[in-house]
Length: 221
Image (cartoon, rainbow, N blue to C red; front, side):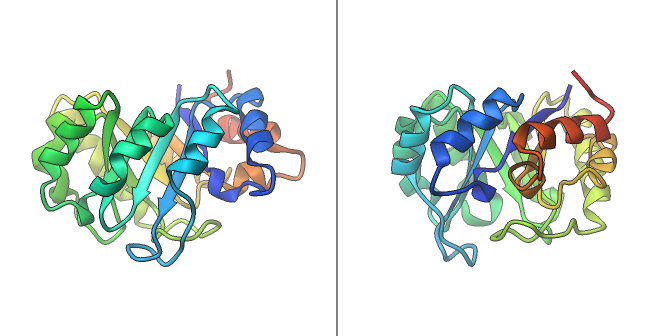
């Protein structure tokens, strides 16, 4: 079964606690939280204080994606706020192996993300140290974008890389995940799908959005 991780970035920020509870009741597996600094990506979102507040609203595992220039500066506070999974970008970590090992020592699952233009070879040497690879299927920074067409093939090659290495790491995709694209992404090997607008923007509510995504992936519960 795939994991569905609604992206809180697409939620109503005036009612984040209620939105988190709604997706938990609707069958979400994780809650995805994008921390952006306005430097690595052209947007500014939230940080550990908001994550800590959300932690009191839901028991869903928190999958925190640090889209920031200096992730090391935020890691301790993000762990303390209640994250179970923390993903850093290969583009911002010159000492990636050390950062990933540090994350594991803090008791969280370490992950690494790649922008669309970053080759998979950039993570080849750290596969033994990761629990998740996050392949960005749009250029990061804003929700509601369309899937980059060649991203599906990149996901397929990433799955082959993980399988060859004997890795059990989750393969996550983020960006442009809709009922029209989820089938090809899961078929290419994705095990975690991050979706924002398709869930929080669904006309019948988040639970319907989650159900429709699962149905489109051919994996109803």
